[in-house]
Length: 177
Image (tube, rainbow, N blue to C red):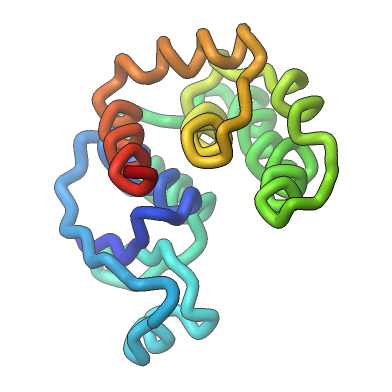
């Protein structure tokens, strides 16, 4: 399996973490987001990453995560029961409302409600949701320099004990070095 990604991209981080959580071997193909190769548009007409090639090409991080869970059911990311799966999917579907929009506004220097959004996050209850949100929490703390609410900071410390999250923290550390 190939993962076309960029270290800086939190959407790619979702997929990197999911692949590691599931113990799936993969080849990473780094894409320079400032100078995308022409051929990436053949894989995804938008030119965006992540893109996974697992015998067929699939873009979009949330779709890739669900595909990985369906295709490789060992070490599932989503819960077994339909109700809990639906709730987890709803959280990811609403990511922009819950964190993404305010994260990107903060990055642009726009005053917003990022700290309020961080304080409202209730993570640590569902693996799939945690994987979907943690790249932005890591980047908020380590790249944007925002102090996390104590509960969220403690959650991130616990999550950092997982090899998948520790690896992502290393990637982010290299980006800010």
